[in-house]
Length: 123
Image (cartoon, rainbow, N blue to C red; front, side):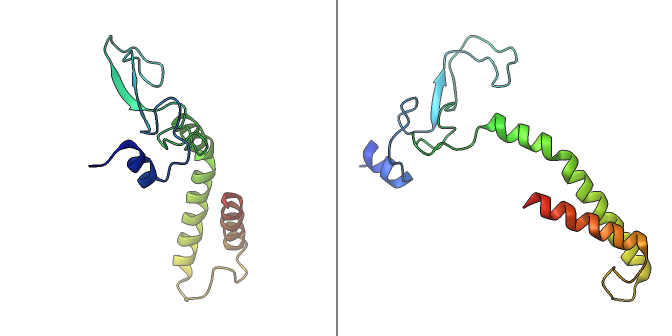
């Protein structure tokens, strides 16, 4: 039979989170939603808001709210990338000669530069 220390070892947890004891889950005394909405009056189990599910005091995972915020902030970048790739593919498709889209047409060169710019920002 597995004990709690075996579970912690199996998950690679060095020091259990003090909030959830290393489980990564926590029971909350309210059903108010994570995003601040109206809930109810019951016990709710969800991800631990201190370690964000890792269970490890010293190695918390990234906050779900922070991830959502980062995705929202990156949305314009992703949209620019989609537009730039579409432009390159569309112009390349019109040429149809099998060469890379860099042979003198300013719109192609500009679109390709935009794709490369967006790709290098994302890394």
